Amino acid sequence: MTEPTATIDTTAEDRTDAASEATTAAANATATGADLEAEKRTLPTWAPMAGAVVAGLAVAAPLLRTARQSHVQLRPGEEVAMRIRPRRGVLRYLATLGFWEVRRRANRVLVTDQRLLIEDGYLRRVVGSVPLSTIRGVVLRTSVWEAFVNVQTTAPRGGQTEIEIGPLSKSVAVDLAAAVSPLGQVKVTAD
Image (tube, rainbow, N blue to C red; front, side, top):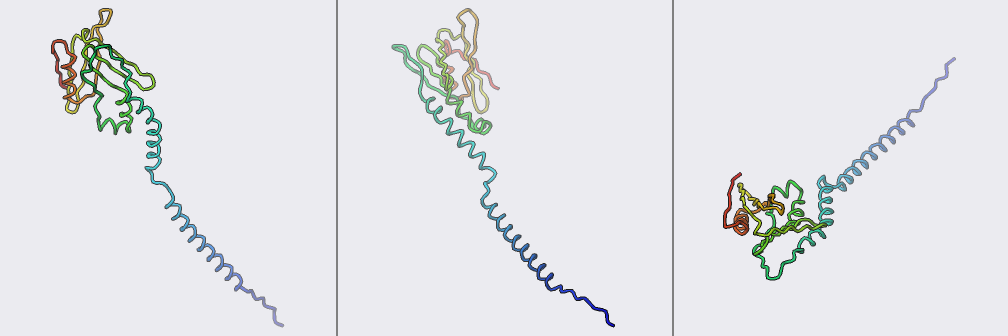
């Protein structure tokens, strides 16, 4: 008597394995294509920073517009001798991501035949007025790239105050120091 033999049909399993391998290969190809599409659609790493800068400029634009308007009221017969702003500086722009321009435009210095006027601020504009007769000394501080003018004044109650104006270009600083100094006396220091 012969024992019955069982035969196992492996062709169905082979077909199933081949089908699953084909499905996996197709899925991998689709995933690779999807990854390539996703890589094409992703933003560069600098894009969020550029968006922040554009948004900051959009917010600062109205402030920059109002900075153009002077809030100084001249007295009758008073004439403006000089109008200056702080100097533009490339390193300051880079270090502050451009916000130095906002700060620079918030400041304005006017010299008239009677007073030294200093405007500062955007939302809360402050105008300081120093009569030229109260200026006791002027110190011109220069460095390689820029200069500052320190104006020493007599305070109303006998004290002294010092106002620093700058950064300015050297030629503007020399002109400002000569315009506000009593009797043309300017002390020059180099940093």
